[in-house]
Length: 386
Image (cartoon, rainbow, N blue to C red; front, side, top):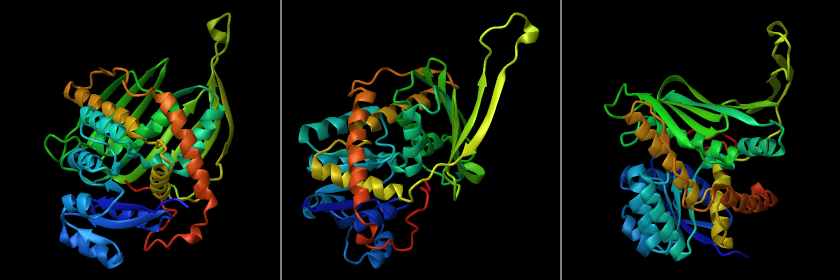
């Protein structure tokens, strides 16, 4: 039987309570402590989970609670110092997205984890969703043909952040999905945006990722839209996919549609594009909460000494793209080239992580959900709301 992993969560604001709920319900995990500077937040959570210790001091959490792992769910500016302190204290560490405020900080965390032999994982939650995994399966089978471009929209009214712009807040979800599907890093990044509410912090951005060979991705992010939109369109040479995470049913729809250029013609009058309109269908998706799958993956990576699907190298790659987007914003949308990563090559690391992740998912599916405590007040099948 695997050892119980003692876990503490620091940061009990917007996302932290969801992490606390999930880690508390997992087999193989003992949620020992939750930490926050707000007494009111701790009091509210203690009323829900009286068996979990509440602590204001992060130093005591690291050195006096007997934890094996720490989950950092604070503001982005605190990700690096808190994750570094946790790793130096010998704790396996999971950090919410984005991993840190700079690529240099990410590299330092990766090196500390490597030297100490610790699991370092980043909360790219959508990669654990049944919808994204189904899309990945379809792409890997070649059903879409050659992917031509991806267009993502992540919009809503708020939640405004004080220390990062909307690209750093919302685009990480879409970037992580795009990199996961394409299995390559962009060659350059362009980003344009507007500042309407808080001076110096863009609340609307449009980011373009150029992958070369006529392949690109566009990401539109906004805190200033009247309705919540979480949509991604993947256009291939054979078929197309629309992924709508807000849809209650049929989150993934596959369109048998394409445009075909004629192979040859003698006169301009004979030149006609061929438009194919076929069936539209929606594949079956298992009802599993992505965040629970992510938390379980973290625990199993610790127990089995495996590299996470969303390891530190993946977090670094994403932050490099965000840094390039910030540089492009300052230059009015000029393209910023990305240097190749010095970390393990993207495809190689993902191949290993996918194998480890697949084993973790199979292990999860073998377990009966009825063996886990009930989720208080939250629909376990709900979409991710961030």
